[in-house]
Length: 445
Ligand code: PLP
Image (cartoon, rainbow, N blue to C red; front, side, top):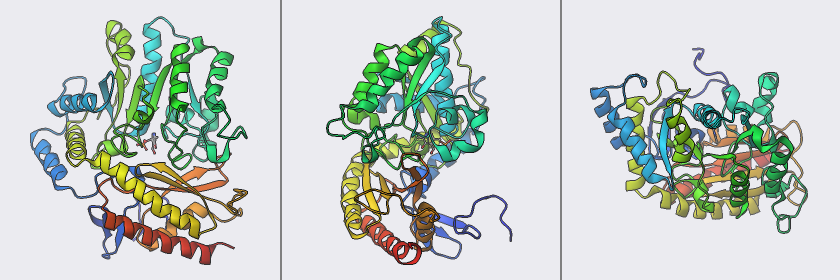
């Protein structure tokens, strides 16, 4: 039977139909199991089929599943907002709930602009981002994203927001030595602000660890502190996009905690509900909200299903599960061991150029030659070939762009549920090893 709900079968034929999931495994209707080494799209942070979440979902569905956010709030929405305020450091106390990471980015953008309008500065409406970034697929979010493959067909419709270089030390965009560069890429933000004028800029947005656009790129220590200081000096809001990194993925509750920076706005998605229901959020500090609360008193944004009580109840149950099971600490510990195991694979295969990441957000970048870091031959769709082989071998991997143009490089992300056990990590490494060996023997020219 032709499949109608999906458009790009990774296997070149029909997608397998999943019958159920349990822990780190998904099972298709033929009974084959897939070790979910990517948590889907870095989302299933607590694994599949967790009974507490199913119970919370049923309980809320029995009470009420939908109220319109402009008429009512709900207990789960209020409790979730409180929980997020508790779990985040500093003054991040105001949550606005939406349904996807892209919507969270759009909301952050609109709130940043509204913040300045309410302060009588309507010219402050540009957003600076990095040219290696992914903040979402909707037009505002894509305008802020430096992901050439996802942008290319729509560039004519996108805002031309300014961008700065990413801290991609493996291939420094500024051709500097990361040991002596003085973090020139962070200083680029200062130069860009001066060029455009701080009076025209509302915010700077960045992923603490670059995900889909670069393959888990971790900045050097000091980088984010420098950026935050520049933002403060020029009266520009700092938006941390923690859609992929939030709620324990990198071994901290928020990845920005690694560098002790407190964003003015944070966006969450993905792991916020672990994929059990759609939900995401833009979370603001009092400083951001005050002019709005004292001004027009409402945020010009939101969607019909914003703050959906069912999704809020599920998200709350997921965040409680993360806390109760110490998954943030587990992510940090497992991540260290897994990176060690992956580095051993890196020594075994000449086409693995770099392994990087924090916690259980790990990237693997592929090259032709480790010493020159040259790209693998054109015509070999490295990332997709590895993902296809992985599917056959029962291991799910997530694609990432890489390279200085965001196109010619190839990378994958390894990001299993934070609940993964040491034995399951060993199984992951074994299945990945088989996949990489087959790629070497069957696909590479
Ligand atoms: N921001 C980041 C950092 C992401 O990784 C993604 C998705 O991959 C998004 C935003 C967009 O989220 P969604 O796909 O839920 O719209």
